[in-house]
Image (cartoon, rainbow, N blue to C red; front, side, top):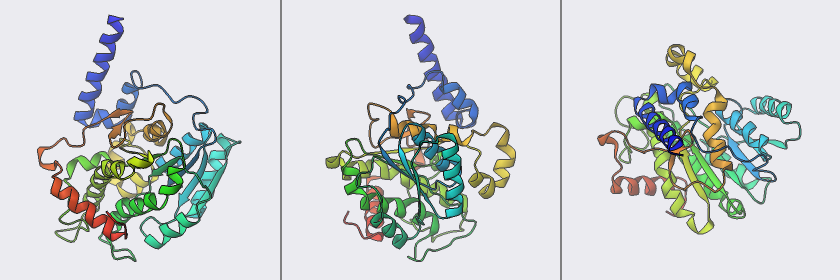
Length: 324
């Protein structure tokens, strides 16, 4: 028993060191290391009869998440902007899980009218799992039809609005869970409540991406509090560095330098699926990576200030027409 505890303690120490060093923790090496000592897999059939919605499900981590949920028995709705990609993803999932029930719906998370149409046409009266995975990384500042910066609209406003509109369906579940797929890049940024739309300074797509991923992590405890009476669990996570079409297309230089040790999309999606299906439910409002709670800040300059959190919440809810 003492030997088992020593091994477990050593693995935990190595896990933490790898996490702080970034490269070993975010690569496939970190995933392989942590598999030896992480929390157990969800039981087979853990999501049998459950209804799940996954945004950005046409490729990459979204598609891998949908497949993982289907393998555990869930009926899965693929939310996509490109329905041809959705059809291809659906075919791949059915090839792996022939008995799966997989639907496709169009929704552009950057468009509030599109989100509202999607929510009004949800094919489920009860929703058990909602995964916000859809993402963008533009190379120049772009505003949406609603007048919001594109990454902010896609990563923050769209998920916030969709979750609130689907609240009744989530509340109808006995164990509803919402997962926000963030990024380790958020560690480099503080919460920019003073400039959520990135109007100041020279615009950089990677910075906009990291800022809004920081905002997603800030949303998790705020939404946990908002939905506490409904028992809706809200979790944020980051998948590490995964080899996906999005990474290859948006960050070609990074992909070229790191592709030999990038994770597979399925490895990147592992914690999403685990958060959606493990029992008992994980602690709500936390930030996760490789099935373990992680700190939300590593740099002293990025710590959230209560006034900034409040200003961010007020601005975001107002932007989508919600009462804070």
